[in-house]
Image (cartoon, rainbow, N blue to C red; front, top):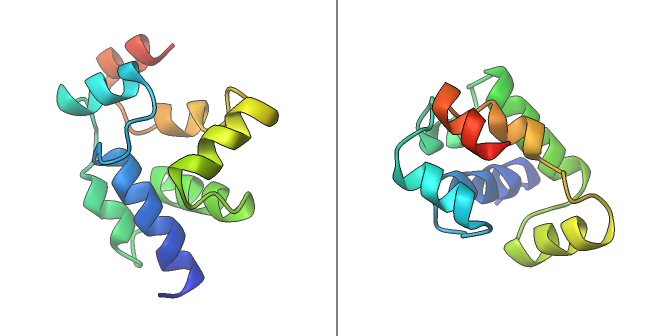
Length: 98
């Protein structure tokens, strides 16, 4: 698996609810508040801003697992990914995410 595919795969498992990070995020995924299917991050040709921003940010900070993401939140920036993840949710989901 190449590096881009690795980060895209983590983005996919994050958005599909396979990695439960917070109760709010998990709830929004279960309520189907996403604007696009999580599978869209796996399409290498998808250049939608929400896809490219999420995958490139994960790659930039080398976040490819739940453990790395939680460590980043605890040690560097608790709001990391908040703005990017909000791009994935409808208005109701964005309001709950705040």
